[in-house]
Length: 182
Length: 330
Image (cartoon, rainbow over all chains, first blue to last red; front, side):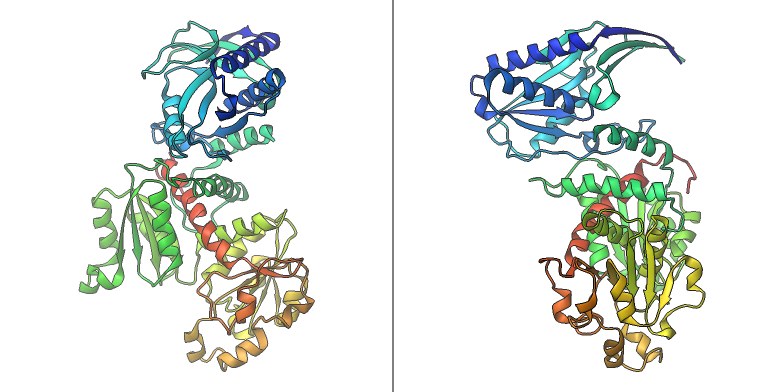
């Protein structure tokens, strides 16, 4: 049912956007001591790791890093077609009074972010939660907006945005595909 | 590491189609792996400040225990609560079974209350299977007669995996009343499917004939069973078996098959000592062996780890049977 695929971002552009997000996070959060970056599995996790790497490169500071699996918080578990696997959530620090930056690959309806916030709040009471995404494709169903965006990408609902990362898919690229409506 | 995660993802999507958990015998190696993999994620949930997730919100789980139980009952009940399901429970002593209502009618009535999962323990083998034919909700076997106790075997294997790198070719000895033990049977199915080498050991009267056909080795000498083993799973000796004349006395059982420090001298370093509970201290395990802590390559007991892991494994099972999409699927 796939039609054509178009490459939207290549390896260099992805890297450029991640660097920019890292710079913006540093700029907006003067106190990096209370900062923690939390990636949303699957592809938010490697992105978060790269952001932490760049923040360290730019400031010399080691930032707390965690990752979150939101499967257990989904509101559509019983209706979706495929059965999702649950991955381990790894947050080895106390998130209370921290400035958390959630990281995900694509921002679409906002439902994943809602789940992630619910999940995060079960770990403690963060001072603040911010959101960084590589691609914002619009079509929000919840009142959620990102604080840091790599690329704004206007899309139609028939299209699929696929972020591929070296850690999970073997190479870095963002692809836009059109799905045939049945 | 991340790429292996991706492989798991495809594995799950393709191969989980079980609406019920009736026994380990029906599961493939891949399905056992899926349950155990997912249990690891649920174990992490249990360590959170709020050890609870909204996953099964809106689902209702009924536990029917027609036989006494401490661990299994509480563990299932806690697993359901940690997943935010509503759980209700019934035990035979306080139910209308005493007024003569049949089991099938009982199950149908419970299903009529829109229950999604029935967890059942019963003294007759095959009861969960029968229920799965007469009601259309998921059935989870919490122990049926001498047949199977699948979640116990799964938590045993999960615990072994936490302590030993590889199940394949691991030597596991199961000691005690093999003939009447559903724990033994489920463990044998599970461990052999995962490639472990299983030995059973006990008095000849408590070893069922032709048990070798399940792919296990039989020995009658406890020292032989201990010497080779990486893991020893010790079963509770049921006191009523002695009244049936299957062994002369508890003292004699202890003398020949009880595990004490002296007997462990020749055991492999790091031997894992397991017991499904309840432990008859001083009978199948001596007081000190039951409490042996991990220290410099000595054998050690993981009996309480098994209990902790039981909750995670049962969460995994409840999660998987409730997301199963197949209509009639076993």
